[in-house]
Length: 190
Length: 129
Image 1 (cartoon, rainbow over the protein chains, first blue to last red):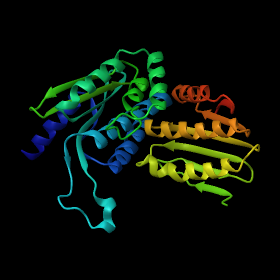
Image 2 (image 1 turned 180 degrees about the vertical axis):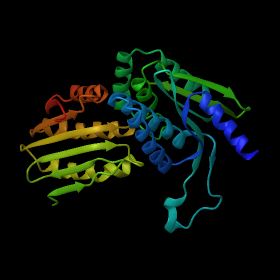
Image 3 (image 1 turned 90 degrees about the vertical axis):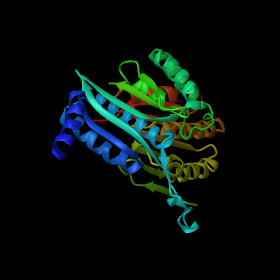
């Protein structure tokens, strides 16, 4: 029963070509650890340097998107003592998979987003998805010089970095959960 | 006055070696820190202090980065801006961007940073080996 259930889950992932799957709360040390294993696997696969760096770069941006922006989060109920202020950290939930489709590598990430953010995200991603590499390069440079938009915790360059490193157009989708939340999925192929 | 900034590389942060007496500054390795602001703050501070007293002297800055995430790209741009400012104020600044010949993304990124340097002298070169 127990082995059967877990094996079913593993088979389901395997059927989809998935080599790595993480579903849960993501922290920076999780990124470090999974990232190291990913590098090792790509080295064992004898992936060329460009592919290895691109898969890894996209993995980092996808993981950091979950860590910074997932709308599903848990945090300590009580404020910590002031001496330990750094310990008050939210942890955010997401799912990330890395797998193969034919000769390609595929990195997918999903997390909850607020309904209020869906249109803005959809607009931004549609724009990036349809851009040529030259247009992406120009927008990247422009964004690098710009002030990050409100609510951004990074440089606002993550999606563009993913699109530039991907060898095919990025794919994304939203699934309604309820009036407040939607599930956001982003796929990059290398 | 500090004459050296020496930060050892970790798996997620680059080595930073600022040898001020010899006017040779270098950043090398991978950059995807947990907290970009925290990592780069002392680097910016040390560079600001050095460039502030460089005047019309000369300096060389080597970027030997294997990989940087998008938030680090912003930090690198700020380093470049500081170097360009010093050059505009009369310093002779040479910026070298070394890239792994197997990874043209890092070559392109170097080209993009180089486009914004008008007074500082920019060199784009393959990493040896």
